[in-house]
Each structure stands twice: as C-alpha cells, then as structure tokens.
Amino acid sequence: MTKVTDRIIAALDTFRIELPSWGFANTGTRFGKFLQPAAAATVDEKFSDAGEVHRLTGACPTLALHVLWDFPDGLASASSVAALADRYGVRPGSINPNLFEEQQYKFGSFGHPDASVRGRAGEHVRDSIAITRRVGSRDVSLWFADGSNYPGTQNIRRRKQWFEEQLRAAHAQLEGEERLLVEYKPFEPAFYHTDIADWGMALHFARAAGPRARVLVDTGHHYASQNIEQIVAWLLDEDMLGGFHFNDRRYADDDLTLGSIDPYQVFRIFHEIQFFAWETGRRADIAYMVDQSHNLKGKIEAMIQTVNTAQQLFAKAALVDHPALAQAQTRCELIAAESLLQDAFATDVRPAIADWRRSRGLPVDPLAAFRESGYLARVTDERKHRLSGISSSSYA
Ligand code: RM4
Ligand code: MN
Ligand code: MN
Image 1 (tube, rainbow, N blue to C red):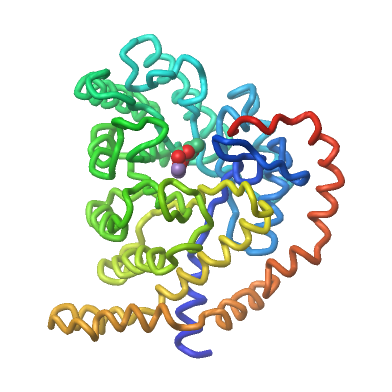
Image 2 (image 1 turned 135 degrees about the horizontal axis):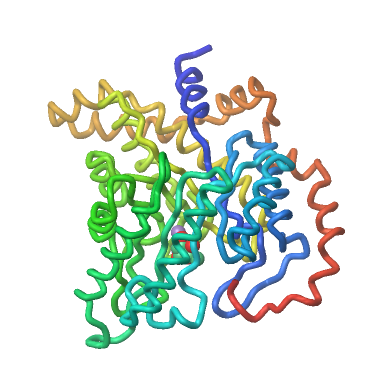
C-alpha cells in the first residue's frame, strides 16, 4: 500500500457524516414544491432511506431529527423513533428543536418581547433535551429564525440579554456528554437583523450558555466571499467548534449540494481541521452534518453524491504534507506553501477511496449500486399513492 492510500484510509475511517431527516422529505422553495413520488413522508421512511445511504457508503451511521416533524407527540414519540434505529441500522443523531413555525413565534422565540412566549420556547428546548436523552443521542442543535425586518422595531440589546438567559437555562438541563450547538445566520427569514447573525455572536452565546455549548457552522450562512476556513481555524483554536451543516451556495442560503459550486472551499475547511489535529495532537470533537433539502434532484441519490464528494474532499485534505507546510509558512515561502494545498487538492483520490470501500465490504460505486438495488423503484411504488393528497404550495 502506498503512503497516499494509507493516509486516505486512516482519514476515511474517522470521517462520519450525519444526514438530515428533512433531506428525504418533500421540501421546496417559498414559491412551491416539486413533489417526488419516492419522497419520505414518515419518520419510518426517513430512517429507511438514510439506512440505505449508510448501507451503501458506510459513512452515515446517524440521522439528524427534527422535533416537530419527526416526533409528532413529543417525548411520547421517542421510544418508537428509537426502535427504528435497530430496524434500519441508523441511530438518531442531533435533535433539532423547532422555534420558528408556530404562530406564537411570529416576532421571535428566545428573543420575543413577551416573556410568556420566551418561556414556551424554553420549554420546547427542555422537551427537546429530554427527547435527546431518551433516544440516546448527544447534541441538541439550535437554530433561531429570531430577528426583525425594520430598523427601530426591536430592542436589540434586550433581545441579546433574553437569549443569554434562555440559553443558560437550557444549558442547565444538560447531563453527562450532552451538548448544545448554536447556529448563526446573517439573514432570512429576518431581513433587517437576526439575533445570532454571525460566528462571533454564536461564540458569545455559546460561552454565555455554559461549558457544554459549542458553535455550529452552516457553510451557507455567511455573506458572499467570507473566509469560512478562517472562522473554522479560530473556533478550533478556542475549542468552540461543535459541528457543521454542510451545503453549498452561490448567492445566499441556497442549500445546494456540498462542493457543487466551490469544492476548494470545503477542502480548505477540512485542511484547517486536519492541520489543527496534526499540530496539536488533538482531534476536535466535530459533528459533520449535512443540511440540504433537494427540491429537484432525487433525494437519496443526492445524499449519496454528497457523501461521496465529502469523502473525496476530506481525503484530499488528508494528503497535505503538514511538516513541509509548517516549514514553508515559517520561512514565508509562499508558493511552496500554497502549492502543498493545491497539489493535495489536485490528487485523484478516487482509486484510494475505492480501495477503502473494497476493504470495508462496501460497493466501490455507491451511486451505481443504489441504481442497481431496485430500492427506488420499490419505495416509489409503495409511496406514490399518497401524492394526490399532499399540498405543493408551502415550504415544509
Ligand atoms: C435554516 C438553518 C437550520 C435549518 C432551518 C430549517 O436555514 O440552516 O439549520 O434547520 O433552516
Ligand atoms: Mn443549518
Ligand atoms: Mn440554512
């Protein structure tokens, strides 16, 4: 075995990607949905589809779940959801509370000026932590739609303080290894201010919450051309990087397939993580999650494509010669340093990934294996009769 193959195999053995349950369901844009007859409608079907992706890729043992959509009876749904894990070979992953869909959240949740709404939002997060524990998961992933649309309409400082209070109270509910992940987003659905607009605010709130809170970086939640790998490097150095929501974008929060627009950026993010591990001897505890919902592509195929791309970019980043890079940086040898990244990025890692798959008893081409498996035809047949009853007019 060559050294390149060894490095790639070692990297892939540590690399696990969590898929989102909502990525298998019919979703769309604010203009409408294009319904797919094979889309999952129940949590059982979402586990089944995720199980298929894991069976073919060997890299996706957990499924991110959404409290409102996947636990219709809250905590009472937890044991039936946990049972699906045994059935489909995929464990529940991060638990995502929903603090944005109900009418009461029109003007916010943790940042709502009405204390009773804030209180109910806090209860929902408390329930979500209980669900997390009951299904044997660890991370509670918080994303807030909170913000305002017009200057002067909200007290930004008060809202910040309410967030601090609520996050501290939520953190106090954690036990053992459980973590709170705090996600930021600069705009949408609020278009004047969002209460957690960037990584600095998320870092502040995670610290205010308590020692088991970390920042979640959604790659689509930045202004155009922002240097995301620098944010990642800073969070690593502060021991505050909790996880990712991966997707790609060209304009805003486009939720396109990972690496479809700018694969070099994903590579640079993975490079910062692996460079950190080499330099410090510590592997950061990072939840790699996908946050994509495919409106046009086949959902399961798009997930397999995503995993494949993520593995390729992670493997390429594992090829950067770290000692040589450290030396070139110290000596300010710019072209030498830059070329170490470019050479790794240009390496064709597909043969080594194929070796890894073969040695783990996985199909060498998971997408082809999926197309040959007959799974899509089977579930299309089982699920298509429901299409007529589903509305195509709303987002979720
Ligand atoms: C947001 C964000 C969250 C996701 C919601 C529905 O843009 O990415 O992670 O849960 O969308
Ligand atoms: Mn996200
Ligand atoms: Mn998003």
